[in-house]
Amino acid sequence: MLFMRKNNWACFLLILAGIVIGGFIGSLFPSTWLNYGQSFGLSQPLVLDLGILSVTFALSIKITIASILGIAMAIIIYRMI
Image (cartoon, rainbow, N blue to C red; front, side, top):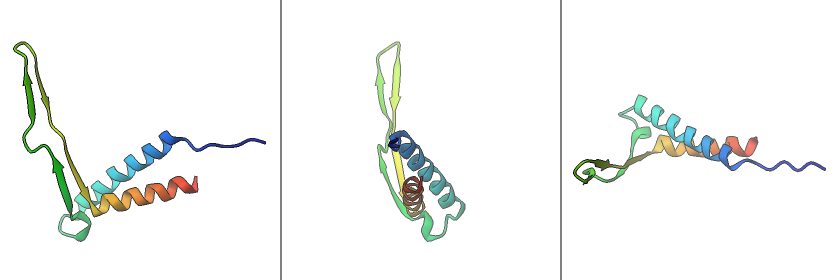
């Protein structure tokens, strides 16, 4: 008997695609409820200056209703596969 195991990387890539597509749909309709969300992260970039090398680190995440719907659709598609 052949047991098929679902791939975790496929789930991760589908969820990532759902976030990207949901964010894109939210940006297409900026004045609707789809683009309502919360942003969090570093407001100012963190700079590490070592003299000959300067490293800048910044992270900002915006979660919108459209991206949450995209994640939900990705999970549904993953379960159907």
